[in-house]
Image (tube, rainbow, N blue to C red):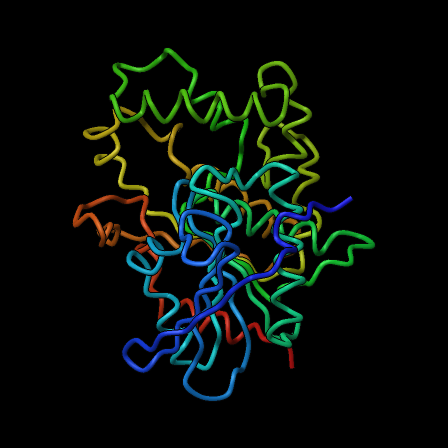
Length: 311
């Protein structure tokens, strides 16, 4: 049975910013802490739609500050919809989260009369993980979900077993204070949401992860063989060593490279890994960080998405 979290009445209002109409749709009027979404309308005819998923701990208001993808989409005639499917702690990768996204997509398809032939999905960090999981599920056998024409992810953790093991390992020279807090929270949430962990039940995480290195059959990739996919990473290992005391084993690029490598081997000629240098910058915080929205060139990304549109 589907969750009913998003099925109650929404209240919307619109504002105009630099020629773009930005519509805020709230479940509780004026409450931008949870259960709302932002729609950026193009000036003229709507040619399609992009659902953009924030990273873990982010809400749409921060995505609007740190990403310019929606601006380029709007200029190209595409509507962008950025949801908060819960509050800041929305976890993205568990089944209840997936059900919320499914219901949300059904609702906005009806509201805006969207078409699968011009529908795209992507996201940042765990939002990117969820975007890929959605594409996998939508393209699986007998799925009734809306199928995106292409999917992209910006520095997503894809192998949840690798992520968990990195966070619990004691085999590090030191552990940065920022990492300590994040690692404890994420590993506790994994245990809480799934009732197990990759060390106790690695096979379970072969199904949970968009890519699972320890799965000898790489079953999670089969439904993506015909899906155009892009993954962006900025593997600035010296930044990670100096600022987080971690090496290549603990950065997301290791998952991305493996996943794209396998997809190409399996026959996906439209699977791409985009690696950047010195592009990562968190605009709202005015700080250098390779794990940021800005590693994706919004204009070039939107151009690539449009090329994947069904005829």
